[in-house]
Amino acid sequence: MLEDSYDKVFGNKQRIMVVMAHPDDLEIFCGGTVARLIADGKSVRSVKLTLGDRGSRDRNISRKELSTIRHKEDEQAMETIGISRKDSVYLGLEDGAVDNSLDVIGKISLQIRLFKPQIVITTNPEDIIVSHHSGDNWVNHRDHRNAALSAIDAVYPFSRDRLYFPEHFKKKGVGYHECNELLLADYYSHKQTIAIKVDDYINTRIKAMSCHKSQITPKHAQESTDYFTKHPGSKGRLELFRYVIAD
Image (cartoon, rainbow, N blue to C red):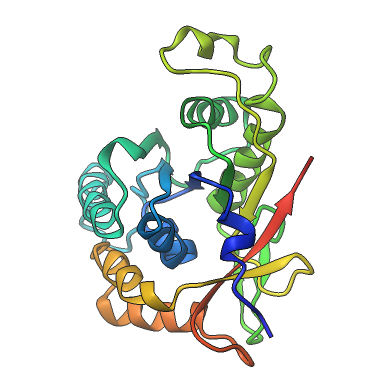
């Protein structure tokens, strides 16, 4: 049976960075965990690579219009979950075109060097097809895979070693930083899978998800939360991750 690993993972940490491809990814993959971290007095920075400005089936909406809508929705979601404006960062990359490139790695590395997290949360970088313990499968969005790969590369070695992106050190507040812990969402049966108990933060997760009105209805937010936090043989609500310490 899965047990709460919150103290094991976060007990000695104060600064946590979440790197995701799109607005709403944080809420879907780790919304309860982030709400719990903030309630516990931890500092959390949300880094979004894109504004999800292609994420619509509406033939009458432009990318510019959707970008504006999704930015406003995300601001509301961040306020709901408790992330401050200064810790909600938008890198402005093109939706659907995120690459595991030096440019993307550099942008994430700069955020790591500025914020100096003790652990980075991102998505599953490995599986093109994600398999859930229910038997369901889904395609792991290309942006999610490349955002995760770039976040991991930024953690090691690019934000650690000073000769990568030396131009960063001309900016105020930038300094050398070493982080060797990762929490990877969208894993459900990996041997390194751990669980974070989120019973007291389910409503916050649902409310934050529901702020993304262009993408998620309140009904979908409730159903998605139930699907991803209820697990056979386990008591309470749990968000699952692969926990990695990479010395």
